[in-house]
Image (cartoon, rainbow, N blue to C red; front, side, top):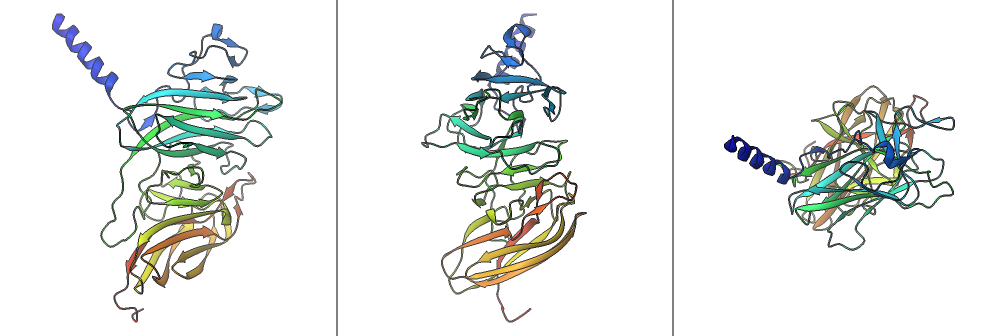
Length: 371
């Protein structure tokens, strides 16, 4: 009996000290909630009332089907979510592997007419003012909620993750609804043989929640210095969408990028090149089979060359290959893609969408005179 008890204690200690695995954090879906004595209406009044989380400010515990006036408050899946009101935050402690790069993904929905935003941060963190400020005023999915991802380097074996609503509103209960908080460890991609670009097929990226159909938004690098789409930078002001083959049409492999913000966001990577040498930038453009229809135009940039590549989308999935040939003018070349136009889904949801880019390759041209 003593041996069994010792074995049980050792097993528990091993589980307790193990690092977070890819997927939901402990109670990351908020299905474990406060006791009735820890709430006043929907407001949580005890900072430790939600298991595995610590709260501050005006935090509400929202049940599926709950309304605010005439508006139904959306809960993506399950029965519960939290809403961050005036100057509110939720914090959790997670065991990780020091020196490993991670991405945080979470689902959010707007519940107020005002412009909303969230701050995401981790500690300890040696970089000053290193947090993501994620604007929530634009809707990209038809379901009423979206997912965001934010990247960081683990500087300790145990960190605090904080999601904070910095807004001060006339209505203290006004704020975004949060559900499904997950982590994923990201391995640094290597350049494959026959491709000078890292992660050109976009297979290394943030956690995508299973059984969800809205993909994950990756914010621009002005909000996140550590892009969770390793090897790539999101330039300008708006996000791009990371999509998977289980819920969208993807030209190659399991992951791709949808350019959902027109000219306000660009997908870019800097690569070493030899000045005077000729290169081919090869890639796929298509649609995600998500009711995004119409005449699309992807702009590609490399060296001094800019080209536009049209794609006629019926919104049902499809793609074509494209090529941009250029001469390198410096030892480092920036490769960039953006969508010339804004597009909206044809399902009357008012949701933004755009062309899909995938399977991007950069190769040197040995004989430029051949087609």
